[in-house]
Image (cartoon, rainbow, N blue to C red):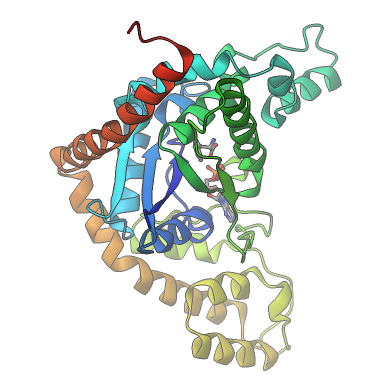
Length: 336
Ligand code: ADP
Ligand code: TRP
């Protein structure tokens, strides 16, 4: 049986944090070890362009995100790892799919709806203020990414499920129009743990809340961040509830079962917050030491990442060109 394609896009819009690692990077890397699947993971740099117009930042984030995934265990000989902008077929397909995407479908996409709502709430006379066409048609470009590689499974966070459904709808419109299965129908794949990793202030860890634990800072920076985690005012010796503690929630995500059980006992016995933070720092620091070094090496070797991208783009384009041959034939773009 041929391998099913699993594909996901990573927007280069920030330096990866612990929430990204546990919620997205690790599950995707685990999935890529599955021999029944062929993994395509790419840096969605043209999706980032809808909001990120600073050339230096786009360059830096692209490098950082690629280096992060490789340092954390993505094997570029197992995963086709590429940059969206290196695969021109994506943009050809983007146009073709745009001709099959009802405008109303874009009106209902929630990133766009959220901005319209925001404008309405602020009494803005133009409800589309701040919306460029890239942002408006974002789901079509995402459909092109997905359908081009004949993707079956798309591992994403909950906020992206609607986009995968739009890609599936567009694939069905196309297949139905030409009475043939040109595109595989994709489906979102959500990590069953689905945990939302809390940040320093207890809310979801997110770069927008400035409450993250970055993965690749120095050991010192890591320690400082961990010591900023908000705690209640209970004193050393007072029993503490592990379930409501951000320290404990983060600890259990990265520690072994035995370590977690022992840590729980210490909470019930009234561990001081300072000591709890010290222990969380110790497991995190140990976990991140080796990736941190690999990351540093990759970031200081400018060709290493571009070599990976070049190799990945070649592989991706082989499959992309095959899909495009079927697409062009289906729409009647061939003259013979
Ligand atoms: P941020 O919220 O920092 O802007 P992104 O939206 O860029 O992060 O998320 C990139 C990926 O990381 C997504 O797949 C998202 O589901 C995952 N992710 C981000 N933050 C968390 C979190 N706190 N818990 C679990 N997963 C997360
Ligand atoms: N839209 C996704 C995000 O914001 C990134 C992305 C672009 C993507 N193309 C994709 C994800 C294709 C899955 C499949 O995170």
